[in-house]
Length: 137
Image (cartoon, rainbow, N blue to C red):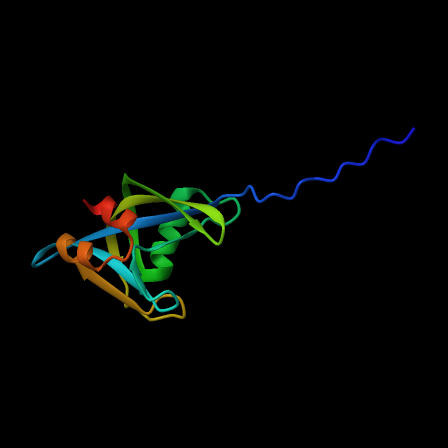
């Protein structure tokens, strides 16, 4: 007797995992944080991006900061997380405070067209998402 055939339920059960950074530098006017503008969404956000296969959250956060800002940074403390839905899937972004090690020349790309270094109060006014503003408070 042949086993009964079962159709598998094709529910989406995956979670989008991303890492990001609150990148800090010291300037003549005080401490500043890096925020980026994405033309595709016309938003201001913290640098972040999806984990690649076999990549840790921390590795993804450092890679995305470098790709989106052209800055090398060092991980410091865990800053927190934000969770939201993106294209009907849950997305979890883990963020770390990062210390700027080397600031490269920013070059606009298809994904990120602007980079700004701002004091916390100015960044709080400019960031588009409440979850990211909460990380700064």
